[in-house]
Structure formats: structure tokens, C-alpha cells
Amino acid sequence: MSSPKFFKLEHTFQGHTARAWHVTPHPTLPLLSSCSSDLTTRIWNTTTGRCIATLRDQHKRSVRCSAFKPPRTNNGDERVVLATASFDGTIGIWEYVNNLEDNQDGEWDCIATLEGHENEVKSVVWSADSTFLATCSRDKSVWIWESEDDDEFQCLSVLQEHSQDVKCVAFSPRESLLASASYDDMVILYRDSPSDDDWTPVAVLKGHGGTVWGVAFAPDGRVLASSSDDCTVRLWQKKEKEESKIIRTDEDWEEIGQLPQVHTRSIYSVAFSPSGRIATGGGDGIVVVYRRKEGDAEAWEVEYVQTEAHGVQEVNCVTWQVQRDKEVLWTAGDDGELRGWTMPEYTGVSPPQTRISAHLILYHPKSTPNPLKMAGGLLKDPAIEHHALMRHSADTRFKFTSKMARQAIMMAVVIPVGIYYIAQWAEVRAEWGALRCGAWSLSPWTSTSNIQELARAKPSPSPAGGRNRGEGADNVRIQCAMKTFHYYWLCSFISYT
Image (cartoon, rainbow, N blue to C red; front, side):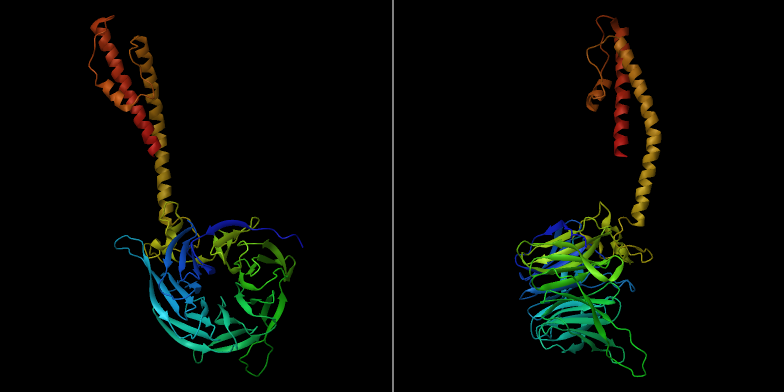
């Protein structure tokens, strides 16, 4: 195995005044949400590195987790919605309200508060189609909420399969499958039952020798990773069912391997990247990235290691975001900071396609630095399908092309005319020199105001040559001044275009 490489630190976001518990990216916008023991949730623009909103006064205790709602592209719903989970036992649902009428920056409104858990809420997550919201708590329960509307939620199931504190929940990106991790050392899987709109447990995964802190599904949903107090990351996969006449509601999942052990303390967080890498972070302050070995799809190796990723502080969360065809690994630490890491030798991946037309203009270099300002529907053409990190919209490309065409035409016309005037100016300048009237001279650096003043000057008789010579000098002076003025005008016009 080749020696592990080190990350490159690209971003450091500071603002929280206590430990940062969690960080999560928006699925399509250049946004991050972070939450902290300082009772706030912060929204960050990853393009500018600015904190563009601070959500406060909703939760009375630490905000433990947050999750952006995936946009519902099938029905044109492009609203930006965020769920926050707190140790006060509640879940806040926030919506970004764009004040388009008065052209002001929008604000975040808490449009709903979900109550029911008897104790600290540790994790919150949306399903891939944004239909369901799952929460888990220290009260040993997992709740499944159905999002009928952004401000209307119905509790579908209260799952009490764990015997201890439930630490984390994660939805499969491909199906209605939910995983929960607990202090009881187990991972439990649940499925949506189409017959009665209820969720039922289908598998219990045992093998860890300590609290399971984190769970994450691979991008294709086929593999589940779990991280634990026992300093291991275990990989699980569903067994193929054998043909049988007996209809079974349970599922057989098996452990298919463990990642090479690097951590020396609890592994709090595990996350798959879009390209299939696995990142982990834990109580030892180490962040590790693993990749599959070449030629062996079942074996993994350590690719990157970052010790003291947040100094001597613990790393509470790791997550991935695609930025301009580059995977960025975000970490949140006890120091209150968010840090973005890149892998220098990484070649990049193509982010998924999306149809959120309102976000097209986000990446134009001259657009507003606040991406949420464009998320309220300024562009509403659902027929335009674009890349999640597209730089220019079709309108922008048309304007850019038109400007280039204008510049080409202007250059083709202005340059020959400019050359002509320069030649005329040189000819007149030579004639002026021949008149030996050296009281003043013109140069390309003569100011426009002086040129105009000289052009308006009345003829003054020359003591050496009489009136005729003075008139000739004045005529040359006027011609030289006007042609120089035209020359300056042309240069200014070329610079403007």
C-alpha cells in the first residue's frame, strides 16, 4: 500500500462561539449549514466564504444537527427549507423567504416546530425525495414524519426498537430504507410498508463492540457503513434472497468487511463521497479518507490522513460537497470551526444533473454573492436543464457572445479609422514643426481641455511672418488640436468596448 497523503486546507469558516456539532451542504446550491452548542445555526455561502444568515432564538439548548430539504424538481418546488434538531427536544423547520418586491435580501422564517420527543434530539435527515423526515433521540425512539407541506407534518411512525440512546439516522439515496445507530451497539434498518403507510424494522446489524455513532449509505444505496466507539468502520450489504415460497418481511444483511484501522478513539462520523470514497472523523482529531483498492472491489485502503484536523480538538462531523467538479470534505470540530479540505491529486467528479432553473445565474462572476437571493424564482424556465455547478445561463452566454461580436465589429472599424487619424495627426504635426512656431507643442498626452482651448484660440499675428503666417499657424494649430481630440475619443471608445 502506498503511503497516505495529506489534505489541502481550502476553507476555514469561523463564527460559532462554542463547539460545532454538525455541518451539511445543500444538494444543489453553494450553501452550508452548521449548528453549534451556542444555540445557533449558521448558513454559509461556500463561494464567498461568508456567513449569510444566523438562525437563533428558536432552540433553547444546543442545536445538534441540521439538514437541507432536497428540492422537489418534479413539481417545480424550488424553495430552500432547512430542518434543525436540538437538545431541547424539538425540531425546527425553516424556510428562506425572498423579498423580491422590495429587492431586499431575504430572511429565514421558522415555519413549523415539531414536538414529541421526550429528550434530546440527536439527528435529523430527509429522504431523497423529500417526502419523509426522520429524527432520533435520547429517548430511544426514531420518529418518521411525512412532509405534506413545508409547514404541515404528520407523524407516521414512532419506532422504539433500540434499548438505548439513538445517535444517528440515515436514509438510503435509492429507496425507502432507513438506518439508525445507537448506544446499544446496534444498527437497525426499517422499510416503508406500502400496505399500511407504516415503517417496520427489517434487519438488526450486530458486530460493533461499542456505541455506534454514525451510519451512511453509499451513493448507489447498496452498502452501509457504520462507525463506532470500538474505533472501527464496518461495511454491510444485503444478501440476495433465495427463492422461497415463504414470504418474509425481514432481510438478511451481512458484514462484508472493515476499513483499515487508523483511529485511536471513537469514530463519530462517517460519510460517502459522490465518487465512492469514505471519510471518517473522530475523538482523536484525525480525519481519514479511504478508497477501494485497484483490482479488488471488496478491499479498501487508506488514501489520505489528516492529524490534528482541528488542532487538539475532536472532529464531530465529516461530510462531502461537490464544488466545480471537485470534491470538498467539510469537517466540524470542538473548536467551533468549519474546515474544507481538498485532495491535491484528485481529478474530480461530475456532480448530478438538476433542473432547478432558478439557480442558473448563481455562478456568473458578476452575480450577487448571496445565492439565496436567486432561489426565489427570478428565473422560472423549467425547460432549461443545467449542470449543478453551471457557470453561465443561456441568457448570459447570449449576452457574452453578443458583446464579443460588438467588440469584433468595433475593432474592425475603429482601428483603421484610428490609424488614419494618427497618420493625419503626424502629418499636421510635421507641418506645424515646419512653421517653426515653437511657443507650444501638442503631444498625445495633452489634456482634452487644453486641446479644446487651443482649438478655440483666436489668431495671433507672428512678429516674424506677419498676419498670413500667423493665420497659417493657427489653422495648423486647430487641425492638430481637433485631430488629436478625435484620436483621444477613439482611444477612449476602444477601451470602453
